[in-house]
View 1: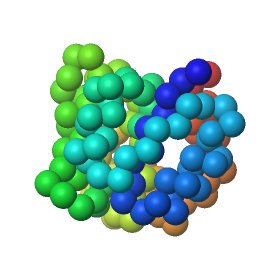
View 2: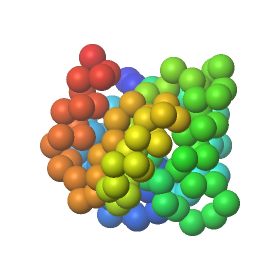
View 3: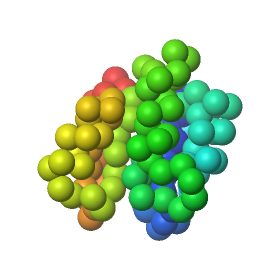
View 4: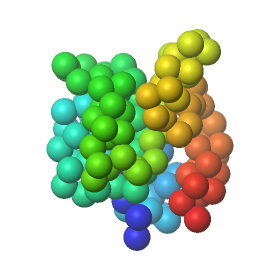
Length: 120
């Protein structure tokens, strides 16, 4: 079963995504960027749903940069799930290697449909 890492400092977002994806995938959760990097190294998830704005020194863009610059993880699929809704934010994330960009509030069904499509 494929691992999906959900990284968000809001437990309700992690729970919502975890419930909607947990029937088909093995869900791992992190509440900050540092924990996310540790879990990525340990579990090598196939896909990461990643918030940008989180507490601590490692935000979502730094996590994205780390994933995409590591030869062992650069093929990991990454979707940003964030409140940053400006086009410039989306373009920056995609320039750095994000595969998708969902703006909060988001449709869980759209995220699930996208995940199922890319992990087929």
